Image (tube, rainbow, N blue to C red):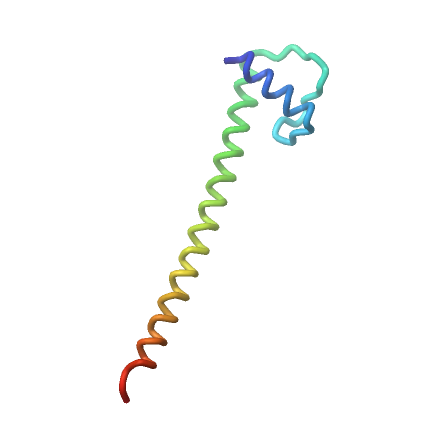
Amino acid sequence: MPVRLLVFAAACAMAGCALFPGLTTEAEPVSTAAAEAQFVALLQKLVAERQREQKRADELQQKLDSMANIERRMRERQSKPK
């Protein structure tokens, strides 16, 4: 597992990935604990981003549902005989 993390971190460093600040493309000895800490930090950032996206999607869905309800009520009012 640590080897995979190092390969992933190295690939990110070569691509200029901002998720691993301070990483360079030079071969640097990284301890297992440091690699795990970087992986945990990455996962935390990804989870936080996903939560923000989900919150925004939920808010937009709620607005859409509200607008659909308003439109439905308006149509019901127009169709009622006076």
